[in-house]
Length: 516
Ligand SMILES: Cc1cc2nc3c(=O)[nH]c(=O)nc-3n(C[C@H](O)[C@H](O)[C@H](O)COP(=O)(O)OP(=O)(O)OC[C@H]3O[C@@H](n4cnc5c(N)ncnc54)[C@H](O)[C@@H]3O)c2cc1C
Image 1 (cartoon, rainbow, N blue to C red):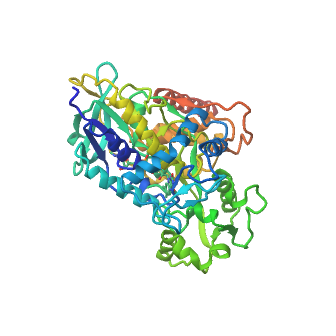
Image 2 (cartoon, rainbow, N blue to C red; image 1 turned 90 degrees about the vertical axis):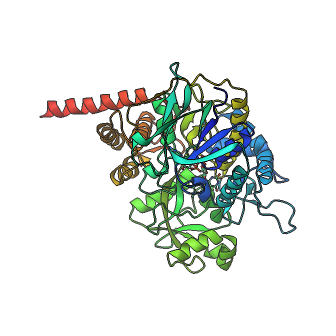
Image 3 (cartoon, protein in one colour; image 1 turned 60 degrees about the horizontal axis):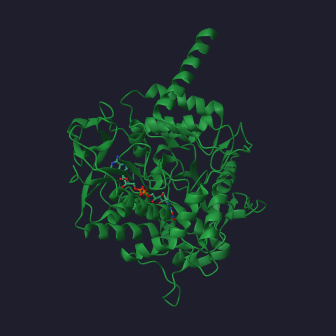
């Protein structure tokens, strides 16, 4: 049994860093798409937050994260992650990732982003940080003999008779139907499957990011936490692409402003202006759009022609749509960007299901609370991967002689256009009970035992959002605009979510009958 490898699902920073840190323990790392593609990590632009500056401390970094988290950040985990930040950057350097340096070529250059009180954003290749990080980690993984890289989609977790995760059921690349899937026993399984943005019609995430890790964990009985907190990035570039390219926050850090079609700087009177927390900026942009205005990011006043050198990725994206940020404001809108909620994990990254760990965006560690501080997610994965590896190394392998799937026919489905539209409309930047209940009923009728992961995850998010009767952080309710004085988490299992949805669907059906 002990000879079974650790199975890591996902080839973004979370999966690759965990696999590397587990060496020399044998690891099989499975990715649904060729390595380096369809991972949010590759798209990251701004960078990685770490308290490296002379005027900075992990304490200040943690305070900024806790402020952004709007009452739901876990202070002890937040401080631990902030303290581990500088060591995580050193580890990434050891993996061969070259971060940008100051003019003297020695000190690492530090950028500023919204809601950070100090310059602490480590970046690479200007705004190509994610690409450099993932390429560096892939290179390191390919050079690590204990890591076997497989391409295929994990459809399900394989469970032992006593409810321990003992492997995965995965469909190798090229397999067409669920019956082509094979069982792979594992001594431990790590979910590193990323976020949920692909459930929304407007997103910056790969469209394949539909939360399959949440579905896998939910079907195995895991507790999921605060799923309603989806961060909408205020400045996705509105040039008709899916996913939407991003205008990094660092542009606003360097003075870019937000204007509407009439040229009005609509963030001017808001505390923090363009550098207010993301939820506040996203709401302001959303309100412009609902009011029939178009919103734009204007880099001309402060960056002028330097925008091309300092933000080459942004400049190239604009050029691909025939736009020039040196000469014109760039159209933007909010888009689903990051999932603060996720599979509940403890300080070692263990979920509530034995044998299952979760790392990166799919996990809810307590760092982000109701709202993520920019550039803290790459940091979280880089740090948490070390804790997970340490914990797995000291864990006991399960007996995997008899393994069972958590459901009969795992689905291959992805989010369809109508689900994505409904998520945007009813579970989007601003929600209310009527919309959320409409979404829950629709997702309920669309799901069954073999529901596509997308439907199941959409349902779980909508039920969680319906249960939170307040506005907090990234969760804004038009019908509950106030923030409760007593912050609380919303924890949910699949059974509870399905029960809630059934009750709602049945009560509606009864009301319709009575009316008829
Ligand atoms: C445009 C953009 C810009 C960003 N900028 C920043 C930034 O500057 N700083 C920052 O800290 N964060 C940033 N973020 C957020 C950050 O990039 C992500 O939170 C982080 O990269 C997530 O890493 P991950 O490893 O958890 O997931 P991902 O990198 O998304 O990787 C998920 C992996 O799981 C695989 N997978 C999923 N399901 C399955 C399955 N069933 N079977 C097999 N494989 C599966 C995918 O193929 C993929 O390889 C940004 C995000 C976006 C979208």
